[in-house]
Amino acid sequence: AQSVTQLGSHVSVSEGALVLLRCNYSSSVPPYLFWYVQYPNQGLQLLLKYTTGATLVKGINGFEAEFKKSETSFHLTKPSAHMSDAAEYFCAGYGGATNKLIFGTGTLLAVQP
Amino acid sequence: GAGVSQTPSNKVTEKGKYVELRCDPISGHTALYWYRQSLGQGPEFLIYFQGTGAADDSGLPNDRFFAVRPEGSVSTLKIQRTERGDSAVYLCASSLAPQGASYNEQFFGPGTRLTVL
Image (cartoon, rainbow over all chains, first blue to last red):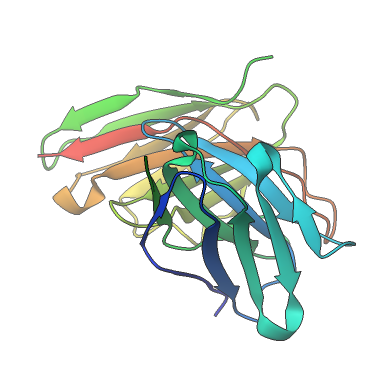
């Protein structure tokens, strides 16, 4: 079965520190991968996506992710955390011809002052 | 421009009751998706419409769940005989029509939080 796995349901970093949120996908998921952010009581917002081409993808708010086929990973990083980055982050994969997304269970990012 | 809208934003109902959740997609988006997000989980796919027809309803958990999109725009998710386990945030997303193996970005609404007492 297709699956996307996020390691760590809660991550806490200090303001200004590196953010690293981990995502692995099953090899049966086509290599279209996404990171979404969800702020409290808001909908999902696309941070970045990998479809084809360059494996290092840059997104909004200074986030980037690298697609590594050999490791079946698509980890999300940001060099310096900001208080406004506190939110829940979801990794997702594209589930075939109907375009449905398969989501991981999410990682709640806390940023400490 | 207007994004995806969902109404109501919150719905509280009693076990056994019937509920309807509405989604207004972005104008011109022929593809519409419903997802369910339970507490502490990621969104899970329920159903996909291309135009008026349900092209993939493999995610509907049982026959108490049903969705329609009669004119290819607004969609309604209907839940009969609600159970406490149906409590979740129901998300709607829309996109341009899928084209082969390519991907069109899905735009999500804010969700409807359903609470079944």
